[in-house]
Length: 135
Image (cartoon, rainbow, N blue to C red; front, side):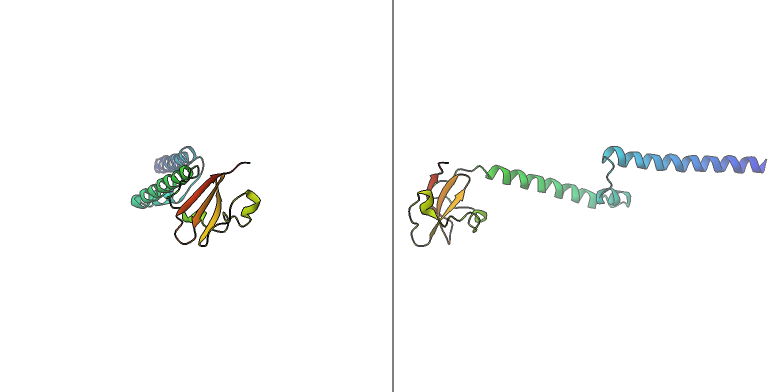
């Protein structure tokens, strides 16, 4: 009788452990498409606040990328300030005559941004002139 009780208790314990393991795998496979990231580890270890912080950080990054995408198609106008990211050498037009542009006055440079030639002050980025490119 003792053997029967011991064997049935062992079977119950093994089946309980197997169902718990399968439930945990199910959560990972179907909610995260098989990925297990730091949020899952934080949640498993009881650090729910860290998982929430990481979720908020991801949402902030998504909003920042959306803002940057909206700025890409901006039309510049005289009197605005050219963003600092467009004032680097990557957008600088050194051969302005090739594009039919006049020589920039002292302290100004031509920048090619989104099919527009922008004449902006080197120090402040203040836009003096905008010409739409003809390609």
